Image 1 (cartoon, rainbow, N blue to C red):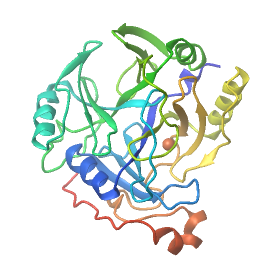
Image 2: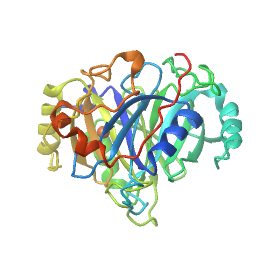
Image 3: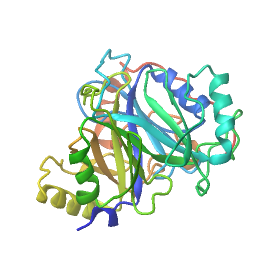
Length: 324
Ligand SMILES: [Fe+2]
């Protein structure tokens, strides 16, 4: 089996951030993404929001999700073995706009830099999460439009992810020989891998950081949590689980019901958590497409505990949208 046959690209990127409203304001106004879902973290006992953002079409491969942990007061340590940059795709011609836009909002950024011949800008969200916009010429996905970001300049979806890695060798073997991705080159301390053709949402970079101590794997303010790859359905997840365990990476979870997709999770040699999420359900399963993200929704298995779950959550204000 070659998982690269089953994986169409990245499905979503997930991080833990600070305050919920601060996150909503940053992602919808500074990053210009569409808020498509308010729900809660399904695991553990604490009530924590789970907020979903995407491009205009709320499609797999464009989704960024956050767990605001500031109210719960949970912190951890940034370091290696984590997602260093959650990467989003914009048109190559829009990087100048993004540099100005980030500066206008007082967001410290790297300015336009180039890696593997591709232009990108790195910056951080208010909680310290590493984010990047990466220029592509061939991403025809539909960006969300805001009063500050035109459809041409907007985020089209996920570009890829940069993973910080103390030791490259085992992770290199994992990405190439276990996952079936293709190594396409090295640029300084960065090693680049392509899923299929390496287009938007199909890029993984390892940043070799041998002197950076291991970061926390837990949830906590400003800590990235996992990257999710897109697969088809539960049958493919079962085959992936059997395959990954069969080649010796034994820690793969059972299939979990995430309401909008089904997922399995596995810890990689670098420490970064990989998820494989199905593409067969979607976000309009429990509210109309044009109303996505406007109200707090719980999965059917939490509805009988709604009052107890909602009470500790901080009040949030949903952004007023322009048009699609
Ligand atoms: Fe996930």
